Image 1 (cartoon, rainbow, N blue to C red):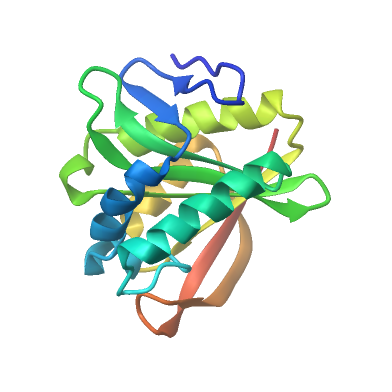
Image 2: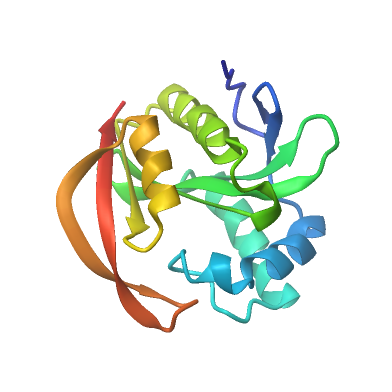
Length: 180
C-alpha cells in the first residue's frame, strides 16, 4: 500500500520509496542517467547528450512549473538509503488532464519501483483534483507498456508517431488513459 502525503515540499512516501522534489543537487544524477541510450531513446524530451547544465535548467523549470500548478515532478529515491532511482511526474495537458511520465536507472529495473512510484503519483493526482491521466509508451518498450497496463490505464486506440530527442527520430507511441 502507498500513502500520498501533501504535495508541497513534503515527499510522497511508499513502503520502499520516497518521491521528493528535485533540487539542483540532483542535476548530476539526472544528466548521467538520462543520457544513457537505453533511457533517452524511450522518452521523448531528453536528448542523447544531456549535460549537467541542461539538467540544472530542467530542475529550475520543474520547480517553476510546480509553483504554477503546471506539473508535479518527483525524484524516486530509496526510503532506506536515499539512493536515486529515477524520476516520475505529471504535466498539465489541459482541461483537467495530466500526462504521466517516468524513467528509471537501469540498476533499478525489474524491482517494481516504477509501479510503486506511479501508484503513489496517481494517488497524489487524485488529491490534487486531476480528473484524467494519460500516458504513452514507445512500442519498442514493452516493460513500460506492462507497467501502464498493471496500473489500470486503458489503451485509447491511438498510436502516434512521437519525436524522441534520444533517437533524433519519430517512433510509434501507444497512448493510454485513466479516469480518476
